[in-house]
Amino acid sequence: MQLERATRIHRGLFQEDFHVFHAYFSKGEEPIYRSIVNNDHLGSKVILRNGLSFWGEDPRPIVMNNRKYVLTQRYVNKIYDVQNYVVDIETGEAELYKVDEPDFFYGKNWSPFVYQNKLWIINRFDPFTLLCDGKVMHQYTCKTNLPIANNNFTQYRGGANGIEVSDGVIFGIGHNTNHSRQPIRHVPYIWVLDFNVTTLSLMDMPDFPSDYNLCDPTSLWVEDEKMYVACYEGPDIWSTENQDYISSIYRVDYKKCIEKYSANAKVFQLSGSG
Image 1 (cartoon, one colour):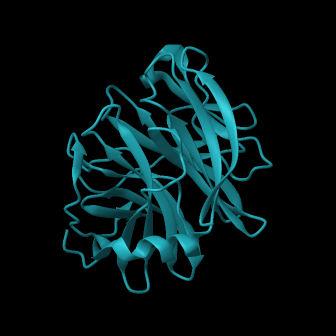
Image 2 (spheres, one colour):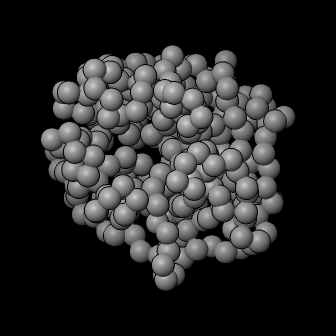
């Protein structure tokens, strides 16, 4: 089986302290999670496993040079005025991630990964934009013309962090947002970035085994030679009251996933045409 639920954890109702968005480095460690303060989306905090906290939300875990970090986003004034930080989870030290281009659109739902001992970030999927060392990597930019969900964001959003599964091949899982139906639908999809042939592949997973309308991948990791993805799941968007939310962890056989879904993949050559 290419996808199988490993565990499900009930996280309570929205009216309770909202601790549903969990990011994991392993099943044996305490997760890092988002907490919404006073039901205010702009007042979200990231609670680190040692009790330290940082203003922001949606932590994405990365391990770089044997040290653990999370990439977080913080809404400053309104939902699309966003700052992004790299946070050391042992010290709570947060560094603002700055891009050295004027009027750069930072946005949200970044997907971080480590490649050649450096932090890389998928900033957005349309146009596909990669960041490294605070610079836009224009040689990998590509116009994808993917379908639009709302507010000029493509349906294909970031999600969990990526993992290098073989030399120069990064595997990740994002969420596909469908606003054409109510309630809104979030379905995981696979992205594969291959630096060897400079391609981006997007693979839909219509049969992802979630029982909920919203299934947002939060973190991806390898443990005991098995890959896992954690997902935030619920029947409706986070701000809907009287809804049950859970966190689920799924085992992922990424080779079988690619074998199964690659026949219908969207493949883009990254030629710097964006």
